[in-house]
Length: 85
Image (cartoon, rainbow, N blue to C red; front, side):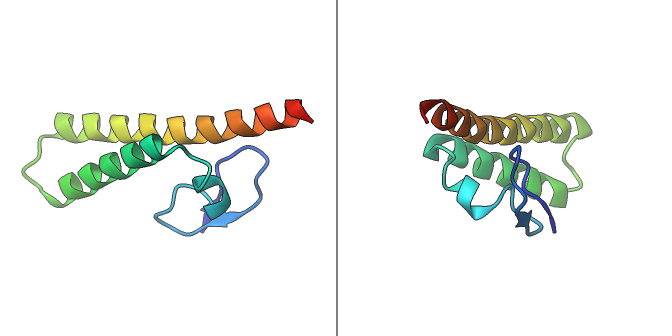
């Protein structure tokens, strides 16, 4: 288990999940789709020993970008909501 990466969240997250359920539900569907797509690509490539290291590295980078977008989207929503109060 690991901690949810959203700032201020103290929830724990099971291995293989990006963030806690509450925060994942706040990620826009388009970004959720990118996270899943890039994760599937990385997972598939990790099993295939014939994949060039450069291609695998690029896939991991794209997944990292997608996960960062997801975290940033949730944190932006929470920041906006805290300013509305």
